[in-house]
Image (cartoon, rainbow, N blue to C red):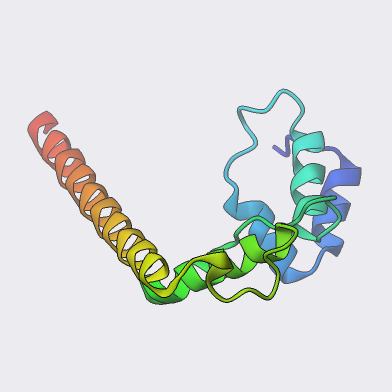
Length: 129
């Protein structure tokens, strides 16, 4: 059973593989009031048709914490008048390094929390059996 109409299905089939992947990575449409409209927004947003397309995608989140932070800063500089082309987005070297360290620590904490959640989930599954 397909919850989207033919127009949305066709738009997804005709989109580039990258746009298809980005639209699918945003999750299920089952909880949407209008799945067809939600899918069209995902397709148009992924294809760069949105008026402000400075959000991060999965490719931006790949690499070391420092590389990810550099990509985030580059996107932010591009969207903030007066900061485009400014190394570090107007931050001095010490502030930029501190921000990179903070980003790395936050990523490590998030990974640790995810591992803990997975462990707890499997413990609960084992207890139910």
